Every structure is written in C-alpha cells, then in structure tokens.
Image 1 (cartoon, helix red, strand yellow):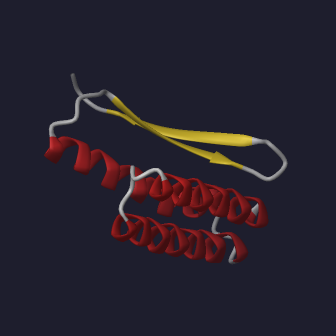
Image 2 (cartoon, rainbow, N blue to C red):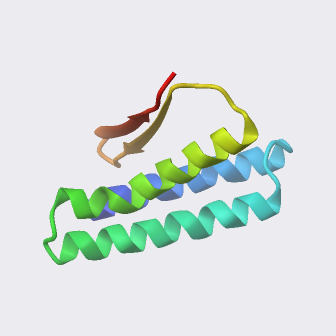
Length: 102
C-alpha cells in the first residue's frame, strides 16, 4: 500500500510541474506542495510500517484536507465539500472528504 501511495504522490508532483510550465502554479507554491506531500507521505509510511492502522495512515492526508478547507474559507472560495483522492499504482483509488455547513 505504501509503495502505491508513493507512486501516486509522485504522479501528482509531475502534474504540478506541468502546471508551472503552463504558468498556473508558481515555483514557490510548487515547492511548498512538494514539501507538504513528502512530509505527509513519510508520516503515513511510518504509521503503516508501525502497524498503527488505517486511521493513522490517512491522518496526514486529512491534515492536507483541513489546510485546503482553511485556505478556501480565508479566500472566500465557495463550496461545500473538499475531497482528497489517492490514486494507487494499480489504478485503485480511495477518497476522503469533508463537508461543511451551508
């Protein structure tokens, strides 16, 4: 599972590189996203290797959802649900979401 999550993470980083090439993402924002994803992946991997369970493995990704949610609220971006989708190398995917008040 952890190897699959790592591959999915690097796929997302590659997509962000394309965003920089298209001028839709700044290099500073890209660096921040890479650092954040790598840290989440490391924490998630450690939780999985120590046998702490699915909740502990997904906790770092839930923190990213909370950051996106907070950013959206501060920026006045409207929406009800933030969804995190994790795509695995074997094409399996899982999603986690948070829905707020309307």
